[in-house]
Image (tube, rainbow, N blue to C red; front, side, top):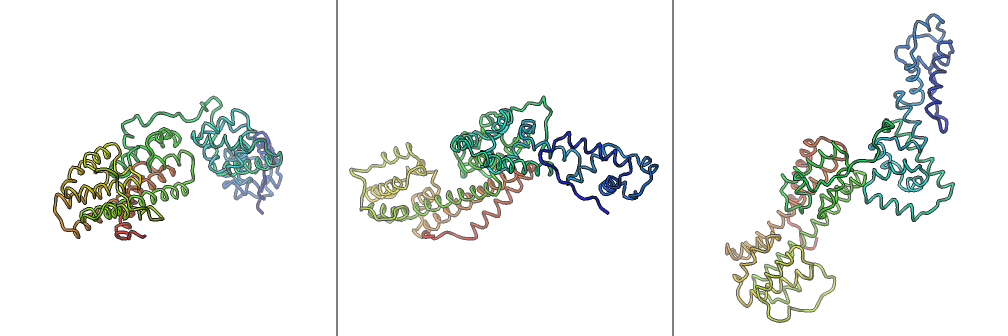
Length: 456
């Protein structure tokens, strides 16, 4: 015989459970078969006890209150008494103000967002505040906007949403995820500090190719360290600087985005960056090979426009006399890689004009100002400094494009692996090692795939 599992009644509370545990203890001592069966089923040291045990045997067994509580908890599908208490506590949503920050964050991740939007307005101000102070500023704005847009919901919808939220919280309690704080604990949420002002995060706002892999690894280490000490929400200030792939990824995890979705979003953004840099590299090759061949400037511009226009434009060149000093001033004001595709094509057409009029060597001063475009820099050096042949120049520039692609992919892989490790709570050093390994594998795949065809 084995004692059947029990089902928690609706809105069970802690006092109800304590009374049940006391009743079980008394029934066992009185020799009730059901009570003995429950103790034998869930208490290992009672396995040899007979259901027909005598009063003397039951007295000698000396069942403690804690053992009665444990057996009752197991009857309800929990592993221990504290877990059962957590399970019933979350059924009263107005007690959620006493949950730990970590528990609140887990609850928000697991609960359906629309249900949360329906239920939040019904909570006590303290419980409501506990949820909001554990959201990033961006998610707070989003949720509050959703609450405002939905307005007053139908009572039945709210009741159904509340039941679903309560059920999910109960299940999280069963799994041991709901932790309760002392009533006197500070429940103002994680403190937000300006991390960007700290030296250890100096590389946060740098584009992927400006920071070395060692600098990126060091930054990931410090992000992980900060998250382990103060929680992921403490990383919020890191996204306030220049937008980069790393700051975008940090924003996602601060928002509480699921790890799989974070990876998907960062991979998509990384693919967009890679595609953009690849096309720009191919445009640099197309433009420079035409310039060093002294092609007509209008033809140079037309060739480059085929990379970003879906209809042909007019054969046009800049009006008036184009001089190198004007181009250098343009570069000082707007670096090459920050130019739009249209401005890029005009810039190359102007280079072609000067090269045809003054010779290719006249463009040498550009070397000091186009270092943000590694592919054009490689072409300039191969042509003007090293005096290579056209096939050699082409090979050098293609190698440069591929080098950029490999390095971008390696850094993207480091960001994805690093942030995934942070979400999973991995140790900083282990996380960095995983990020470096991911970089090697991702870079090798891009290298093995070879130089992409411009039409790909």
